[in-house]
Image (cartoon, rainbow over all chains, first blue to last red; front, side, top):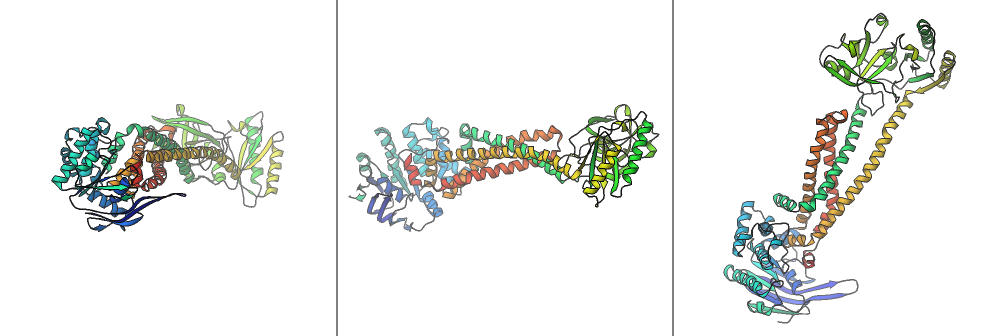
Length: 221
Length: 391
């Protein structure tokens, strides 16, 4: 489903050159739940951004669903992100000025869908994460766990084949973190969604199918 | 998407209030400037209504006084004959002080039955006026000898006053004014006697006769193309000989037109400079607010890019948001601006205000587009991975 070959990422300033990722080769199968662990600054989020086509590698190539992404235009990359990928972030990235339902509808605005379809799909996604009673709330009126569930609903509303989660439980206490993890596991198990999750928490990583460890930008496991 | 943007704007109404107020105030200022400019332009497009390029204004102050009116009439008849005898002179007319291209104004209201014409310019002129000024008599006649024995004072009115008082009805022979003391004997075309940018206004001409000839101290002279400075000296000497104790002042109407146009243009130019600075300030303000908006929404922009928006989508969204905000302000502003023609404020034509509203709307949209395109382009260039990492 996801194939990375010899990915390197170098950050350059006038004086310093930093190798954030070094020759990463990774294959993620369809329906797999993969976790990426490593110390802070080892390149986990950079790798996730590259997989999510939010950042470009300095070297190497990425195939999503057997499609090479290296030569895609901004428009084609945006379409691929919109249709194949769903993102969950540690800090939720909800738009505070929009109600829960409108936040969840966001990815569908960049598709050819009617308002009625968007509403139906967003309502279904919120039901799936157990937040159908909070559709008219604003993010500021929700707890951290509820906000992350809204973010998950937003990630799954377009029925993407891949979900990329960047420390989705990082800002939550263990109980809420477990709730979020259960939702992700359920998505993986029942819908067959491929999930790549960056985490610091070994307990969460244990629940996934496979663990990849990074250290100083290199894959060590 | 539009509904989504309306919702976003509505939910951020507090943050958007100041920006919308700034756009509204800018619109009202621009509307005032455009109203003035459009009014001047519309007046400029109207014909002058008379030929002024070879007309000189000759003033003599103080005038002359005689013991009897007959002596005065004889004096002026002799002067007329003397001046008409000069080959360079094609026509002369004695007029009141509010002759064309002077700042002098004499106005009063004129009634006809239930019609009430406000701010009518009253001019005094003798029978030589149409020939000297080349105004066109559209109906009836100008004053002449036949008015010497008139029991009701004859007047000639201009086209605008004719339309206002009589509409499509008959004007000639009708009695107008307080106690119906004037009889309309003719209608002439409108003239822009206060310069290129002035409105012709309502006008009524009274005949200079023995009753008011005593205080006249100005005549207009139409000269031939051959008239040169030497002739001007001869004219000056001729006038000095007739008015021995008077100061004689000869001015060409072309020069007087330039002067009176400057008097109109200078305040307009000052207003334009002030408005220009205001517009620059507003533009910088808008630019700053939009720039700030983008910087405070980097996370949202990053998110939108992550979930499927292209750079162009982001740019278009920010520009569209600005345009929607501007549209709301312009709708409110247009409501207030529309009161000007509806309530006939400043007595300008409705077309002036309507054109000014349209121009102001276009101007504000262009200003908004100019101020939001670059910030929008910058927003499109935001790298999603970096923007999302900043939160």
